[in-house]
Length: 82
Image (tube, rainbow, N blue to C red; front, side, top):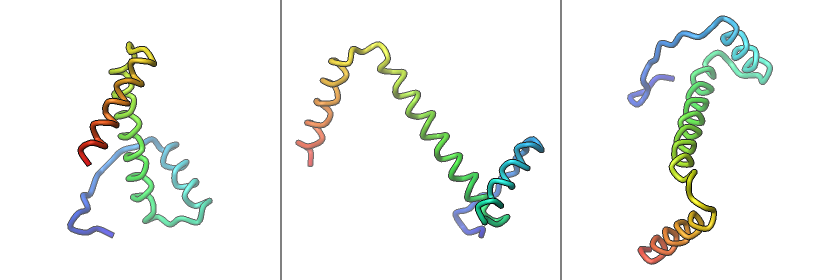
């Protein structure tokens, strides 16, 4: 279902990955066209996962108390701005 907002990708995966994904989709009654949606969802989740990991790494040296204080300040500032 290409549209104005759809970009075509060409990707290469191992044969095992191809078989695994297509089997997974078929077992759940999904069709060939559902592969694009599956990949898009997987990429979105991976980007979110990496973004969260990077954000967490920036606060790894903070004590839980300092982090709680920082969060409380951010929540208070956001509420005051609304």
